[in-house]
Image (cartoon, rainbow, N blue to C red):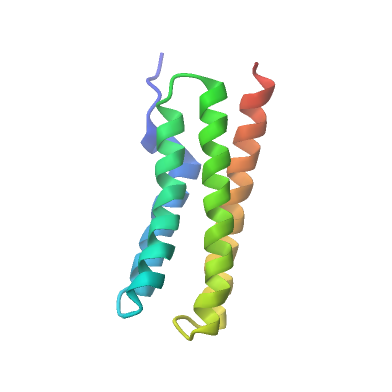
Amino acid sequence: MAQRKLENLDVWNDARFFVVDIYRMMYNVRDYGFKDQIQRAAVSIMNNIAEGFESGSDVQFAHFLNIAKGSCSEVKSMLFLCQDLKYCTEEKRIELYDKLYNISSKIYNLSTYLKKQK
């Protein structure tokens, strides 16, 4: 039987690459409070997926996925402010928002699946 590995989970990898996108976009931003908040929220998506994956139960995994989904909403909101503050272009905001929408959808689908397994 194949071993379950976090790095084989598509949604975690998507979140991981999304974090890199956020860090790259924010690299030269000197608004350290804003920069820290959006980076931490993005990392929270990836880390909550990981923590839930290793939790040992589908119920706990679904719980951590819900937290990750909340972090997705926080980053979505901050992306608009990022554009408003001219830390990114509208095109970049749309690109990242679309990636985040896909991550959020995958999180929702996985959480729904896990809840049905009970």
